Amino acid sequence: MKKAIDYIILTVSFLGNLFGILSLLTIIGVANIMPFYNNFEHILLGYVIVVVSMAVGIMSFNLFAGRRKNPAKAILSIAVTTYSTILTIPLFLTFVLCLIQKFGATFSGFIDGFVSPIYNDLISIFKAEWAQYLIFIGGIIMGIIFLAVPIIMCIATIKPKKDKKAKSASDEFELD
Image 1: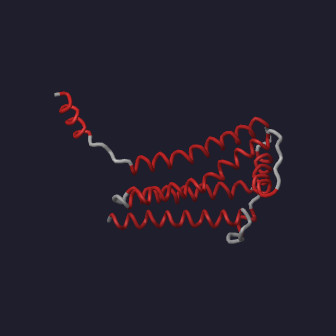
Image 2: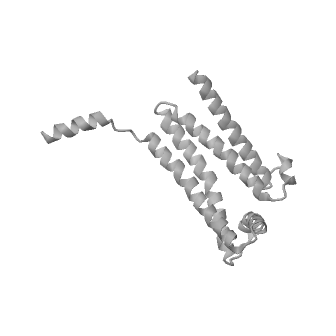
Image 3: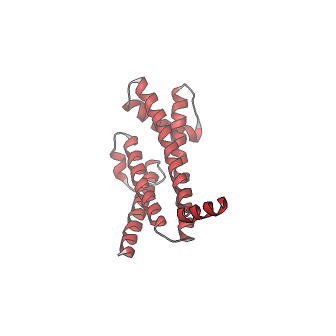
């Protein structure tokens, strides 16, 4: 039964990550793998789908890694945390740059091509100025959480747990 559950978890992880990556490649214009994204009125909806599917894939793989024994558990946990961090940094930086653009900065080249569509879409959806600031600051906070939580979980997974009974016995021994 454990193997069947592991295969299901691994399949969900693989499908979530695959769908997320293929969606991301379509949305950013690298390849038109999933053309239904072209029908979306707001590019933001596509990014929400990417974030949700990648989160499901990453959390599923993290669960799979946690069900392994060391050293596989540690290696897989570090790998999924690295993968998650690499994918989350652009999300975090996008919201930081959107906030900077809201303050009046302009960008050019790659940064403008990446940030402007998202910025313009957010501005068109959230018309009130206070709502725009709230979304940009909320996105930054979300990015920080998405960066911190997997790292904290990885540390908790690979850090050896101290046995409470053994610790109590050693504390008593030291007192004598």
